[in-house]
Structures are given as structure tokens and as C-alpha cells.
Image (tube, rainbow, N blue to C red; front, side, top):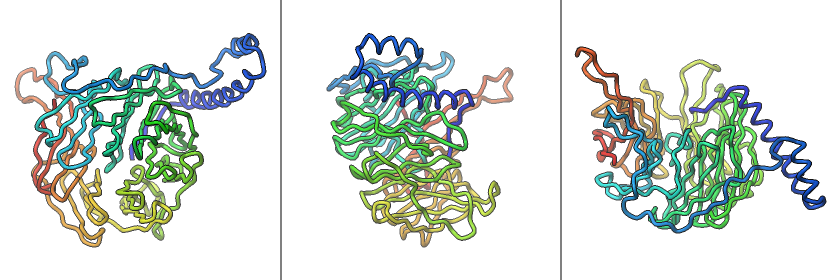
Length: 429
């Protein structure tokens, strides 16, 4: 699983930020006991942030984005006609697609990508860093029948959360109550209904440790409160009930963390370990079909640092209290994405191979795609036939021509309607 790594200076800054948060809590108590003038002198003497710096409290409610909004700057090269890069996509059910571009424009399609509507939230600024790095098989945003929500990080470290109750026709955009000027890793948002949601911010981390800040809302995103920091989690968090949630761990930490009190406290989740295997790795937070049935793709090594990687599907039928494990086929083609259609219907997707089981991993069928799924980043199947994948679509001119132009690097979406046998390009807005 890809993890963002930061240099030693950022790690040091992270510890300073953690310390100032604790100082901030003490400072709040001091302000209730001392005159404000004295408190101001203390702040000046410290010369540093005394409390978690609140971002601008601006909240924009019920602003309509129906139809086409005025275009944001395209950021396209004058010599290129490429669509801006895709930074995330979601395919929650057949025919429904959400796409977010590097310009931060958000588009919605209800007809499988034949037509698109600009549903960009208001006051949505162009990001300067990756803010959504979905694991294979995972949705990078909340897209339930009750609410649509996504997160964004501005250039000065403000985390914006946009929520919509009508599929993006109207948005509410709110800032988290803390800025992250030292940078962030993946930022995610998880809602279980129209009111209860959590935002997670992965902080600058190293290969041996990670920290994720967790914020909670109980009013549909109008206000957010800092809840806790998970030591060892790389995030993002995913909740399945008002009390139960999960977060993926860092490579050198425990692979999975869980909470049963709404995110106030977190514990290491015990997953099965095959006899003789070491170095368990996890590909992200579990994917839950409902509040009980969940899945997560994991892999092990027999010897630390040596191939082959041995893949398994871990499963729970009791909301994560207990887990069982099924061994997955070891194939030559690296599996880059996985998707869960139903409790027994799963897909494993590689660049040259699409595999499916309909009996919970006991038997598998495979097809060879009509095209290479180059540098496959993510894939989602919403039925036995319908799937969407994000691949590399870099194009290069004829190298034999005199003074050939450079290759044009980009990514794009491809669509299958026959279970992965044939894939066609999806036209983006």
C-alpha cells in the first residue's frame, strides 16, 4: 500500500504541533482564570501557537451548483488538449460516477459517463497536494443515499469538508477547526447518515510510525470538533455505525485499528495470521457492505523483504469483532485492485487479468482484458458485468519523426460492461 513519507524536518514539526495542541488545552484553562491581558502577554512570550489554530469559520450553506458552474482555471498546457488529471473517482452503483480533476472541479454522471454535470462545491480551492488516496476497492468519498461528502486541503493547510444532501445540487462547505501548515498525508471523510460523520487527517509521518487526527460532526458537517489522534494509523478512517469504525495502520505499525466508542479511543484489531507467514500488510480500511459484513485484502511474506507476496481476503460477519481468512490465488500478474460486489462475489484486477469468484473465494474464473490496464490505480465493480478502472493514458508521438514532441502524461477511466473482458475509454468533461 502506498504511503506518503516525509523528511526529518517535517517529522520534527509534527512533534512540535502535537506539543502545541497539548499546550493549547492548558491555555484554554488558563484563559478562564487569568485576565485576557495576562494571557496575551503569555502568548507573546511563548512566540508560538498556543492552541490549535482555527481555520476561517466560514460556512457556506445551501448554495446551488445545479447545472454548469463557471469553469475554474483549466491549468492545461497551451500545447496540450489533455483533460486535467483525475485525482479521485467513485462509482457507488451502476451508471453513477463522480470524478474529481486536478483543477479540483467535481463532475457527476448518472448515465455511465455519457454526459456530465459540474457539481463542484462552492469556495472549493485548487489543491496543492494529494488529499484523497483511496485504497484498491475503496470509495474515496462518502456517496450514500443520505449524503455526499468529500475533503480538500488548501495551500495554507486548511481542510475543507463539503457535504450535500441532494447528490451535489446544493453543498455546504465547512473548514475543520485546525490548520495543518506543516502538510498532510491522505485526508478522508466518512458519514454513516446525514448527521454523523468523521474526518481524518494523516499527519507527516515516517516509515516506522504514523499519526492520524480524527474530527467528528453530529450535525451533518455544520460544525466539527477534534476527537482524538490515532498513534500508528495512516488513515483514512471508515465508520459503519455511530460507534464502530476502522483505520488502516502504518507499514511498520499494527495493520488495522478499530474503535467501538465513536472514535474516542482506538485499539489494535486482531486479524488472522497464517502459520509461518510474517510481515502482514493491509491495503486500506475494510470495505463494509453493511454494518456486519466487511472485507479487507491483506498479504504476507514468508521471509521479511522477499517475494512472493501471499494474498488473502480477511472477512467479518459481526461488524469486525472476529475475522476469518480465505487464501487468494497467487498469479503472475500483480493484483492492483480489488472490489466487492456482494458477500460472495469478489473481483481481483491486474494489468492483464481480471478474476472473479461468486462463492466466496472457493473457485475463480478469469478473463484477459482486450487491452492492458496500464498502471492500474483503482477499480470498482458494481455488478457482475459493470466496472470502472483508473489507468495510465500517457500518449507519445511517433518517435521516428524529426524533433518529436514529449510524451503527454495523463490518466483516465475505462469502462467494462461484460465483467472485464472488454474495456472502453470513458469520455471525461
